[in-house]
Image 1 (cartoon, rainbow, N blue to C red):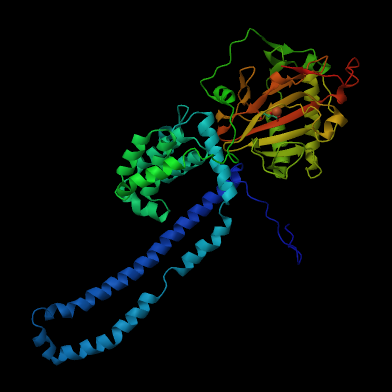
Image 2 (cartoon, rainbow, N blue to C red; image 1 turned 90 degrees about the vertical axis):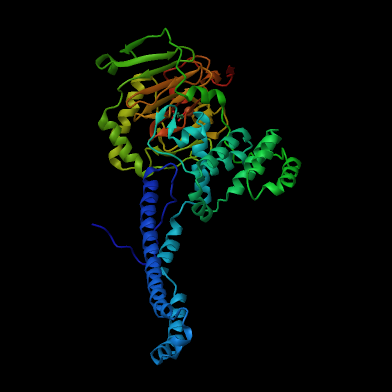
Length: 512
Ligand SMILES: O=C(O)CCC(=O)C(=O)O
Ligand SMILES: [Fe+2]
């Protein structure tokens, strides 16, 4: 039974996550549909008025037609004089009133009120950044985007002239002139003359595209192409000399790098479907030894690397367990930053939603499955987890990614003093990602696709010395299709104190 709100209580609307959350994007889609119907209604209202006006004009023309060429005769007819005088006295005044009457105010107000629900500048920037990340990581050209092809996969879609222009503009501002020129040129290829009136309403003029394209050419030291571009536009041709001079004198002005995501080319290469892991001579076997549990129910294990030690287990969680974890974590999901529980600032390093579990707000029914997960981690690794919030559910949406990073913190946070550093990482993949979203270790040239039920386990430090292993640098490639959900668990050093009595903390170094 729903409770009515008490007086003074205001409902809290959490900020929307249009980029990371499909549900929030669904609201946008539904709103767009409403607005399109509203626009059609508006056009119908206008049409009604146009129809009335045309009918008026038509009716008023009829008597005048008869007068054509014999005006004097016409005016001497008393049955013409009266109507003309009356008509001139009254009808046009009424018509003026009618012409002045605003049309479609309801529809205009409807649109205006819905504007509060539109994505903000920041949200739009995030969305642009997500597509930029996909374009750069997977090396997608404008032609591919227009034909809806990413890495050879056909998406039944295409981007418009204005999307293409918008990406060209972004690439220009980020100083990627070669790519910007490709996108701008492509947007010009896409324009048909009948589009101009619509594009004009949307604030796009062809001269703007030509000028930006010419500017890219100047930046690329292709003066001749810049000139040809300007000469090719009727409004720009006569100013081309002046424009060229201006572009040349403002050339190489440093662009703002502030917003530009920094992409690691080596990481990108491995994310692409063209990268295949080197065939290893390591084997697939059943781990039946770590703990007594595995003697009863061995887990299929695949060694991906011996040094650093990286293994994959298969079919670790059941469908019911996955469903349960997702259900209890779903209401706790928020946009996550990087660093211990610092959710205050949206991160560019990781674009995803996250939830620490267990959490004081978690539904109590989540406890048994979390205990089972902790036990399963112990079964796989022999390692122990004691502290409160043991796992983080991470949900990557559209373009969601995690830049390359180390899981160890190397004393950069107080928490490492209390718990030791993150000795090992256990990553549960909760769904199959159709395209993109692999975990990648660039130094090891290793890619691990996200596949439901799989668990990736690796050691971030040397087993005995606890030297931090920088070869464990890793990240999550941008998701292209759908979403990626993982459960990430960092196992801390001091929890292992009793099973590893030989280790003496305090003198670690780096493995490179
Ligand atoms: O989602 C992934 O593939 C990587 C996650 C990760 O690196 C982490 O949680 O530390
Ligand atoms: Fe990580």
